[in-house]
Structure formats: structure tokens, C-alpha cells
Image (cartoon, rainbow over all chains, first blue to last red; front, side):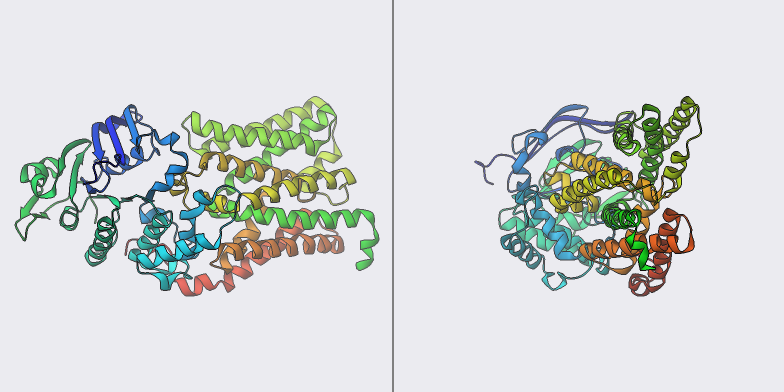
Length: 265
Length: 278
């Protein structure tokens, strides 16, 4: 939608191996500025690996990765253009830290090594908390929040660096449907303001109604396009091994999962 | 009791205790929150090799331990990364190997050394002016580094992955943290002893962890508990004629149990702190 802006992420023939196990195979994917993309796939399909390789957290065995046109290790100051929201379960809820201090971390890299936080940074952190609707929780210890609230703290931290793109790893895991729904409404709002939003999820149903682009992954990229065009029974079949069925409802198809292979709920 | 402060050795021991109580508690906060207790114990035991090497070569054993411990901690980090073994496995290897080297060095000396015994179990009487200076310099270096990189060290302790994606040099900062941890161990060696020094890295910070939900408060409390344990332990050891290091560690342990019993965390958070799933 914004043709003159450079793509946020460009993966070209990327293969990732963990020792002998192939986690991603020959994936080429461009995430354009302004996209609201969901990366969908069953557990073990390499979704999280896709995000990690795109962010330079994992080295590709083959292929190239570009973030804003550059290799991740050369991004330098431009890391602040990306807001990364890790899986909330990776955060230790017992860590002695308060919400505002977590959000302030989003400013650290911009402030620079050794330098102290300024009033401007605190204002940015508070604003980020307001944008995700939990400004009232600024003084809480992070363990004293619900899963959905903790998720929003991490989103606020990502927003605090005033990024151009938000990348969320499995934000729908461990939270209920209502929480997921309101999170996606929030993300939809950021998208309309011009942010590029990338969400990794195994949860096709809720996600598909909100996003503009879908990439279906099962080690290799099966398909990438608009949700209505892409989420066809054959595609879901390929991803979920015939365990899923589509239910027509509204504009976009919803999926009913009879059996989630290899998944514990 | 206060008349003991008239003795030079006691003044030195007190200064050393304040230094140790402060620096171990500050670094201990990271050790506890990042789960580095085992690497702390590993490096502490590695210092045995360094001290023995110092005696063998006839150089200041504490100074020898500085280089030996730094080499060990870097080797552990390098091995766990390059050899694709888990970090605790690498620690296990170096823990044993460095102690074995220490035993070998002692054997080469061909004589039983009383001073070495003091290093193993800690000895207040043996703190010389030179030791105090060396510890003081190391302490200033450690606290300065923590002060300079305070926010970054917090970030990599809390969420290393997000720290890296925000552009913070996580790997280098972790190496820096390991380095200052090794220095902290060495500066505490002579008073607390090789065997017990890692306890001072863990216990004051673990006690403080029970009492607060704020990072800075945890650090302040840890320093307070560390100082009271170290200084109190020292005076108590003089009074009771017990080993100083052991008395310090047991004083800190008493704080740990008291703070665990009083913990507001436990009272309010209930039995399942990891309430992620639902």
C-alpha cells in the first residue's frame, strides 16, 4: 500500500537447520511496509523460527535475510524501527520489576549505552502504556497481571521505541478468545495508523478476520496472500493434515479444528 | 567488644567485609535473577587453581586468581558456545579441571602450605594491606561497570532475546557480567574462603528477592543484608572464635530463612507463581 517504502523483511531462499533437523526450508517471503500479516501454521511448522531468523536471532544455513534492506547484524541504530513482542511465557512473572520499568526497556537502545533515561523516555513509555490501555497498571509488578495484560505490557515495550513495524510471536497462546480478539482490535488500530504488523499464530480462526495478508507455513512456505484468497480447504489440508475444516461465516472463512496434530491444549 | 577495632588487622577485616558485603550482593542480584549460581560456584572453585598457581610461582595468590578465574569463566562461555554443550556441562568440566590443576600445583610445590588452608576456608587475620588494596580496586571496577551498564544488564537479565532485537549487544554484556562476577569472587576470596564465597553471591540477593517486587529495591536490600551478614559475621566470628567466612555465610543464611518466612511475595502470590497458562 505504500510502494515507496522499503520492505520491512525480505527472506530469500532461507533454510534453517538445528543440527540435522530442518526447521525452515527454502522460504522466500517479503513483508512490505504497511502489511498486517499473519504467519500461520501448526506447532513445529517453523513459525517462531521464521521470526527468529528474520530478526537475526538465528543464523540461516542458506539464503539471505534483509531487514529494511540490510543484514540484521548491520542494522545498528535502526533496530528501533522494529518492535519485537516475544512469547509472554518466556517472561519470568516472578522477576522483581514493575510494568513501567519493563516498558522503559523499549527505550534503552535509543538512549544508548551508559546514558541515563530522560523525562522524554518516561513520557514515551507512559504514552505506550496508554496506547495499549493499561496506563493504570504502571506500578504493578509484572506477575500481578493477567496473561492478556502481561501481553500488553510487552506490546507497550515494543511501541516505546516508536517503531515502524511490530512483530509478535504467538500472542494468542495461553490467553482466551476474548483477550485475543481485543488484542487484534488493538493491533488493527496500529495498522490503520500506518504500522506494519506481523503476528505469528497457530490460531487461524481469530487471526484471519483481522489481517490483510496471510502466510501459511509448514516448514516451507505454502502460500502467501490475502486471507480470503489463501485460506482454502486445500491449503489448510496441507498445513493441518486434513484435521481442519472451514466454516463459512461472514466474509472470511473460519476454521474449525477437529484435531490439532501434536498440540496440547 | 569494640576495643577490637583498635587492632589494625580488625580494621582491615572490617573494611574488607563492607566491601565484600556490598559487591557480592550487587552482583548476586544478577546471579539470582539470571540463574548463574552454578557458574558462580564453578568460578569460585576454579580460584583454587589460581591461588595454588600463585604460591607455586611465588606471586600474589589473589592476583594469580584474578587471571586464572577470568580465563576460566571465558573458557566456560566459549566452550558452551562453540562445543555445543550446555553451559552447566561446561561448568562441570572446568570446575573439576581447575581444582585438579590446583591439587597438581600444590604437589609440585612439594610442601604443605598453611596459607593455602586459609584461602580455602577464609581467614580474617591474613588480610594484608596489599590484599585490601587489591580488593578495593577490584570492587571499584565491578561497581563502576554495573553502574555504567545498569539498564542494559537489567534488560539482558530480564529478557535477553528482546534486548538483542532492540539492538543491545547482549553477548558482550553477558561476557562483561561473567567477568565482573569472577572479579567479585576473587576479591572476596581471602576473607570468605574459596569453598564458601559463592554462597555470598547467592544468599543476600536471594533473601532480598523474597522481600520486594522492585529491582532497585532488591539491590538495595541485598546490599543491606550482605553488609549486615558480612560485618555481623565478622564480629561474631571474633567473639565466638569461629571461622569468619563460615560465620558470615551462616549469618546470611539466617537472613534468608527469616525473609522467606516473612516474604510478602509468598503470602500474596499463593502457591503457583507461574500463572502463565491459566
